[in-house]
Length: 111
Length: 111
Image 1 (cartoon, chains in turn orange, red):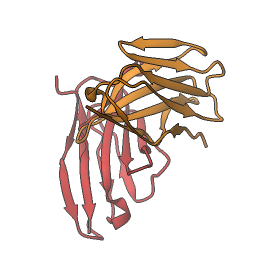
Image 2: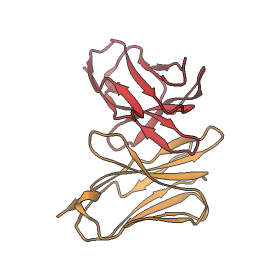
Image 3: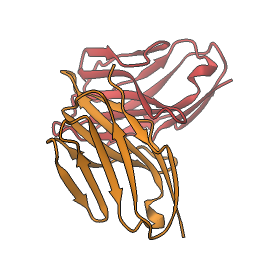
Image 4: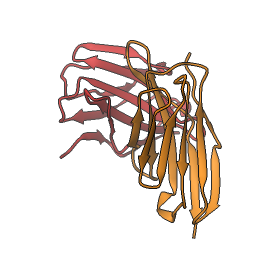
């Protein structure tokens, strides 16, 4: 069974601080996605990384896929209150392309 | 654009009752899936379908049935509701580019 471990599960920081969320597995994934979810809504895709070692930037968010395609990280620079939400990583693997989700990281950015 | 539409948004059931959560997408996606989301456990895959007439089990299929008679619709049936099925349910469809689109969620309480 493929598992994705996210850490930390909860993060509370002040506006302007930097943070990193990790997503780790012992399994290899063909691609890995990061989602953000607001209360009362479904997750919304932020980025997909496919190639080992790949780095993608989305404004203040930097996503990295591990060289071995088993782990990923999300780094937020100068966090803003609007970044508050639940961040989920999800890995796709196997012939069916099923997505396996991590437990999520709840981020609270205080003004 | 409607995207993925789920109904109902909220439902309270008594133990032993049955019900169907409806899901429809208007993007002509072949792949559809149902997830449940519980605190600290991320999103867990219940059932998925790679096309009309084809369904398969995910991580937590017990107590749920699905069918896929058309490309657009993918209903989830709870056969005999149990308190352990109290959760938030998300239907999702996936594009050929592997982008997942989630519905807004259905909050189910079983008493």
